[in-house]
Image (cartoon, rainbow, N blue to C red; front, side, top):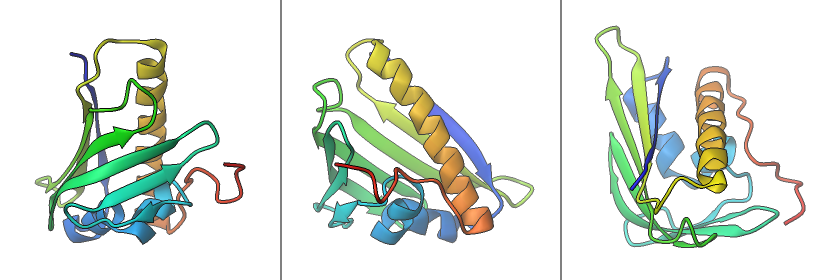
Length: 143
């Protein structure tokens, strides 16, 4: 099974990066401005997009370094995949956000598209944390 994997360095403490990946306000700031739901373990998060909505079950949220979701709804290729966020600190003091979207059945055009979009949204998370302004899926987008 192919997996999507990205890492990005962020000049903020691990604890601040964790808040960006584990809270509604954080997720709204870099991934989807209309995110809603329950970000605690066992809760469900919903991310509406124009074409579809993604439903994620929070499987793990362990401060200050990891979050894991199970996709329960969305495009067929996403359902059953897992999304992993791991935050660590490098020797120079920067946080490293490692992201993996695991369990894809095969490399399809959607797989390639999602890999690119995840890279863009992780850069959005970096911008949110370092400058205060991310580039999430628009709040005013038609869903």
